[in-house]
Length: 309
Image (cartoon, rainbow, N blue to C red; front, side, top):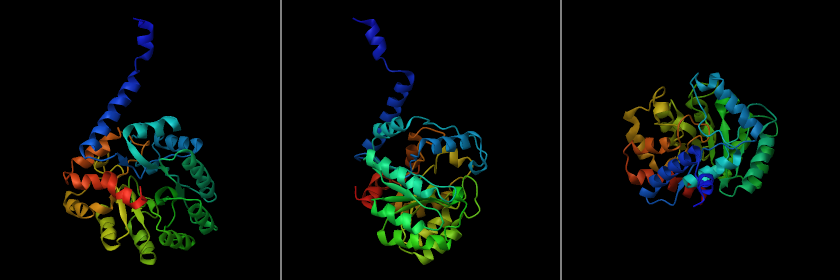
């Protein structure tokens, strides 16, 4: 036997850990009889942008709520995509978002190229309240964008800004979902909370807003908007995990309402920017004890229907 060959082929500790976690994730969805997962809230960005995001988390920036936030999956782009595939994630997103004018169109160009070279990524685009927003949103739609990302907290803009109204109307007409971080967690922004979103929906009731993080911490207020507007959805990103429960706990009295919205709740994770293993999000959903039908819908079926997978 070639001992040197055996040693060379032996997996590293990191590889073994990845395989173990991938096996745990696959067992989760396998027990549910699913073909895999659909994760509507994952971040792929230009390297220099993502590195800036990671630096912000490392530096305990104010929008992180001052929390220690180690990035669990600080890997190269190709490694991150391959890891999601190892987990059995059938489709994922490239949640890009601008923090200033003049940035969104460039991000959309990058995201379109990423989608072309990453077939299992849902072509993602973004927007910002600025002159010309309707033009580049239309360009992205015509180029095949399937989901948009809006970040009210980081962008520090009012989602009901008049500059955005034509773009919201266009996206409502096209039926393209918009994953929007509009809740006040982990730290409030100038325009976060349910009131600005209520004003958007009053003008565009068919807009397919997907409220990120279940609207954390204004869970119940955003549930109310979802109950009022049939196209409003919510994603589970970071909700119910031990990390989030430690500072923005979900009110248990709202569990029946969450169960009732089961056809409009979508799995989100915030991969790779989470301070815990990916599987923690899945176990947190399982611990709610809302039943396997609810889990199947949330972890796969709702998104599969929404995106025609």
